[in-house]
Image 1 (cartoon, rainbow, N blue to C red):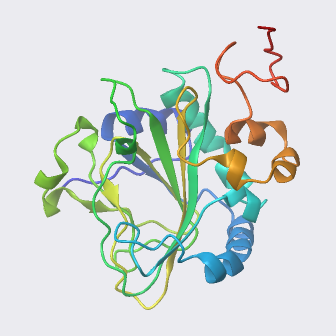
Image 2 (cartoon, rainbow, N blue to C red; image 1 turned 90 degrees about the vertical axis):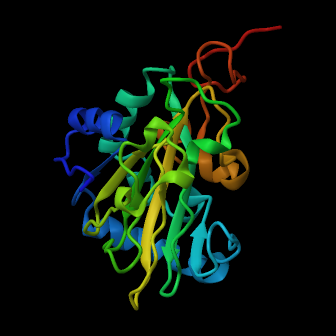
Length: 263
């Protein structure tokens, strides 16, 4: 039976396994204090606007939130966690100068929600480049992920781009993991949310990190007010996209790397 490997909190072997298997879990990374604060920050937005993304793909009993850094300052410690950045450095910087957050979404799967359709996150880009992963994903368990409450379903080794409609149930593994753990998977890995057969919600925070020369899936310049973006330290602003890629792409007068040339 195929499984998702579970490794210690060490970026080098995690990145190596991610590249070879397409998915890997690291357990018990985030602290209880951090998780409690992030969940508290999300509670009111979840209740007030969490169903605005409801549709056939996202589900009708699943709450979702975007613009995460505008909702929770504590979430920055998750989005820029040293383990995540260490893995992203090793996987993504093979094909870019820098990377940035592609999207970040809080997801609360409520009781009664069914299985999400299997998909690849990279499929929203209109092309593929052989051997190049456009992004990686880090799904944090803000609550326990169990087989009953909708733990993320993953198809290990599906970065080979096998047809999704040919994938059998025996190839799918649920990423059950304790609260504070993180599941990494490649943009080319097939995955989906799971069915919640329990009586409690399953809450996670999924963030993608994309190559710096790609258009971000979420437009952080619009979803995060400029005054909020400016209030974060430079590493967070860079992850939002406030940096150029090399000396030409995305250059503007406030470029933190000083790239600015008169036409």
